[in-house]
Length: 326
DNA sequence: TGAGCCTCGGCATTGCCTCC
DNA sequence: GGAGGCAATGCCGAGGCTCA
Image (tube, rainbow, N blue to C red; front, side):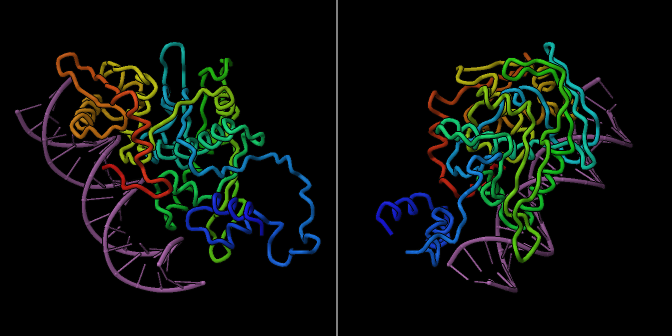
């Protein structure tokens, strides 16, 4: 084996992958028995695949702007109510499937796919498509989830909820504003199962056209990797809103009522206010410091320094699940 | 030795009820 | 109407165990 090939395998081996596994995956034509003979593999007949393989381990998390601004995802699992949201000529109607609405935790799958697609586009890869194939283990590790059986089980339930939840909206993506109905995931299928049990190893999902247009137009924002450490659904939603509206500005002030409506919370305004006060006390929101103005009944988000988000990302240990923020 | 499974307990959200 | 308590439900982490 040439030095170049050895170096290529060393650089591209996945965490925990043995040399043989990495060698077989990355250099299939050099697998056992092929040396000096005609390859036992037939030529690849479909080099131009109609799906995108998500295999970039260090892609930074990215989310689409439309779903950050408007509450497409429920904060609680099992929510079977139909929700409608209207603001500034934008309307959103969320119709749950049999298993209830997809939750903000289920959205991690969207974020994972968007991150992979945008990173691939930035690297100049030409195989990107709205059909994304990925290994479940990579998804679980990237999104800071347990990799035990329950992790795979929850991921399957999330896929079912995403496919079952229907959205009707006129949110504009890539210059298109039309009344459109779509599932949060068009369809999904298990493409590889483990031999011993029925656990899914690799999965393929078809993202909705609406989302695909947003990705192609780069209507996305980078999130802090600490986003996946946020445990409370409401905290995740508040972070999304802060990231979307405050962005790199020094601060963003919003009334509690407006924040409440934008969040999509189904709790009472009183309890929502209490949750925001708790968030202010813990100060655990990545990239932003939050303060609550009792008299004005408003919240102000302050960006934690111009380089805050990037610095936080670089501080994290890559590839290793982080302890969640409670 | 590491990956995965199982169980238990903690915590958060939400809805409902009662009291002031 | 607001405040507080309680229960149902869901998500997640920790710890111990098995297995390849």
